[in-house]
Image 1 (cartoon, rainbow, N blue to C red):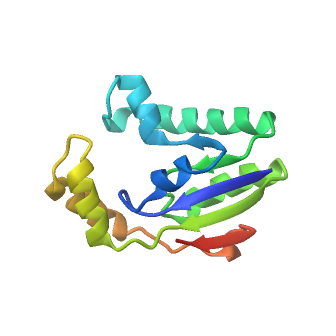
Image 2: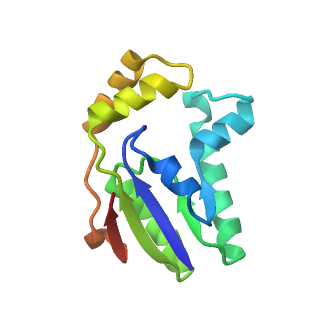
Length: 147
């Protein structure tokens, strides 16, 4: 069984890549849309969203399904939690790193937007860049694919 942990800024192409594959896709934005009926980010509900994504992953693992974690996964700590869960269930873990430059991501988000302006996405993505660490197989993944 395989698990793909996607890594990249919003607008980098992660969701497009995921939709082209045959696997269970776990996407926190989709969970937010499911809860609110449209995309909405509410800090007070992020623990619920995280727990829902973990529950989805466990259900998929219990059914021996390949899984794609379609989220930014910008930090070693975030990726480590997924790696630990997948390795416990004997999954082969692959990081898929989207090296799309920040300006392209901001521009894409400005078009798609999810109801927010390009200026909003510039602020969000610039903030994310301050915590981002490039993924490495040294973190425990079996493979690293750079897109």
